[in-house]
Image (cartoon, rainbow, N blue to C red; front, side, top):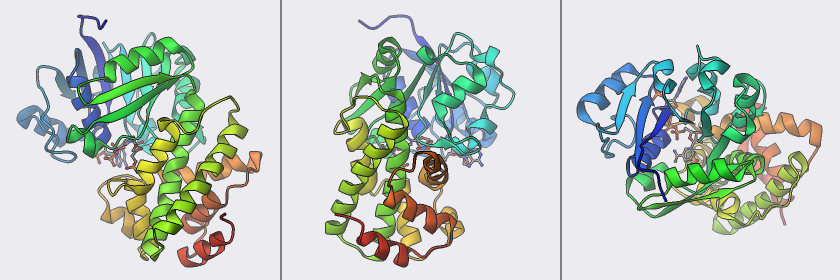
Length: 334
Ligand SMILES: NC(=O)C1=CN([C@@H]2O[C@H](COP(=O)(O)OP(=O)(O)OC[C@H]3O[C@@H](n4cnc5c(N)ncnc54)[C@H](OP(=O)(O)O)[C@@H]3O)[C@@H](O)[C@H]2O)C=CC1
Ligand SMILES: O=C(CO)COP(=O)(O)O
């Protein structure tokens, strides 16, 4: 049974996913301090009760949600801190905070990216930088686009942690009329898989932009699943069922959905946009762009065979042409 005392939550981030999570949490018995870096966006939300920059149709309930631009103020009284800033910018967002500020709090990563300066998963980085203990860390995963949450389309989330208690509490917070959240005890496997699927979605976008069809993409995604399996099994071996929605489901939605930032970014690259022009064209962040560099670097230790990740890396960081890389990749898929 859910508690009648409101749970105090700090939401860190002002993008689409933070906005969608605010909508989900506002369905339940939570009070939320919402931190945004943009003062103008925060003021707009306070005045007009919607985020003008992302998912602007979502109504923000002012009785449950208070916005602020001071990070200390946002997390001060929170029981749960949800991180929803792209991984490349989370360190900047938390500037001024120390381990003391996180003492006793649960930290939930809603981020599907890697810390680029240390090639760490976000929960690993929170543990090593802010001393958040493992049993207070979890991540939000699963096939779930913010845009569909805004439309209240039935969605599913998986809350992964190393211990059952933490994941169960967070699942309760995020289950509502149109979202069902379930716990899972594979924090690192789920986090790595969520990062990898963004890179694969980039590859799908690139091939789509080049004119490859659905037949090719189906083979690409099937091979990608094997690539993800080899990598997570090498980096964090444990018994896991990769056909669950936290892994396969998230790969499928990101690889195929027109809402996907990563697929969209890849499509622009496949069509011949430069990286800079593709980034300018999109108002949103494709995590796979940053993550592929980290995964490529980590794999220099593990030496797992990952032809799709390697191809995306060479296109984005070594100036290889999409046409030549995908022509080579063709021969490596089965
Ligand atoms: N969108 C989705 O459906 C889902 C997203 N996620 C994950 O959520 C995380 C957040 O992504 P999402 O909400 O989609 O992001 P969006 O692409 O919607 O928005 C970008 C966010 O990044 C911020 N940002 C951009 N540049 C900088 C910068 N230089 N420094 C600091 N902040 C910056 C923006 O702030 P500003 O507006 O001030 O520029 C904005 O908050 C990602 O890890 C993503 O993988 C996970 C599941 C679903
Ligand atoms: O993780 C997501 C859906 O589950 C969002 O993926 P994109 O960032 O590619 O839109």
